[in-house]
Image (tube, rainbow, N blue to C red; front, side, top):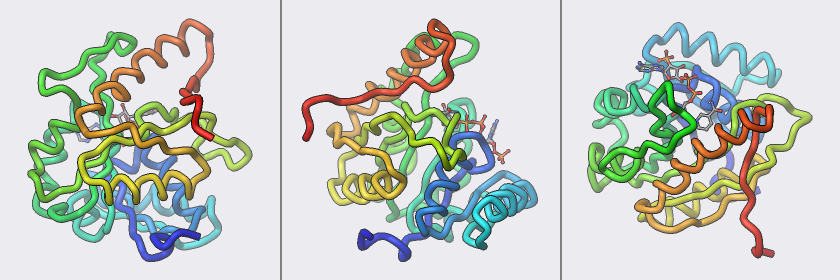
Length: 223
Ligand SMILES: NC(=O)c1ccc[n+]([C@@H]2O[C@H](COP(=O)([O-])OP(=O)(O)OC[C@H]3O[C@@H](n4cnc5c(N)ncnc54)[C@H](OP(=O)(O)O)[C@@H]3O)[C@@H](O)[C@H]2O)c1
């Protein structure tokens, strides 16, 4: 058990979706208190109820996004890139001083299997710019498919590249990754988030090419 366990409440903004609800489920199963955030409180509460019934425990609650961001210790953002900027604006004040894990991939439909990074460098760098220097932005999970996150029988076969400019925030993120049975890799400063974000389009292409749903990545050479 890590020192962060059972003392950290994780708020997942956009946690009603595929990736956010899957990560929320894994963290709740590992013992964390979770808040699901949504634009609509009722939708968040419905997802929370669904996860609690899967867990057979009351560990997940649902709130409107800005309330969730205010109540969480660690904030995780899982919304489509098209909703990224707007969502950040609605939670800006509530996340000041907190660790903020951005999962967003800057996909631009319909060509989601082509790398199309924003001119700022990456979604994570936009996040840091919009939220300001007092928010400890970390980028992670872009390469983890939602496909098996709610499947208890299935270990997630993917390393998690973690980038950020605050060493403490990265360390806590690495612990949160380990807590749900994955291996996190410190992949450097936030400027390197572009590579993890871009890799997702490569994985989407691989999924299509090989008719699979959950290709992932592994970093070799680390014992
Ligand atoms: N799915 C995957 O396998 C996967 C893997 C790695 C990374 N990611 C990344 O993780 C993020 C979330 O992916 P996802 O598949 O979970 O997305 P999703 O299910 O399509 O959407 C997640 C949530 O975002 C909110 N949302 C959707 N459209 C919105 C809009 N126009 N404005 C504001 N909020 C909106 C919705 O929440 P409410 O309606 O409740 O507000 C929705 O439930 C994306 O950036 C994606 O690229 C996904």
